[in-house]
Length: 137
Image (spheres, rainbow, N blue to C red):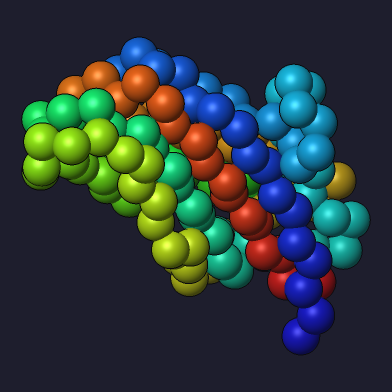
């Protein structure tokens, strides 16, 4: 079994419950979908990394991921991918270890997958995220 890897990254909207499409890796501002490799058999893993800046002890958030578009053979799929919170009275940046979700998702080769993330909870002033998609080819 061989694999191909695709990545998107970027800053998430600072407004709670606001979907944000991530940028293709290295594009800085170019929001774009991930093209499914021509010889892909399926999506086998999703890698997720989150960074959040908290201002108060009350700051907390749950993060969700949506994969959609013509590249998703069975349609839109949603995932819970992480959480962050203050819990103390100082401020700082919280980061997560990369979470690896093992999945078995059928894809459509040469079509696009839109990667959208959002958070719920209290307002977190700065959120960044990286998402990796691992395709079996």
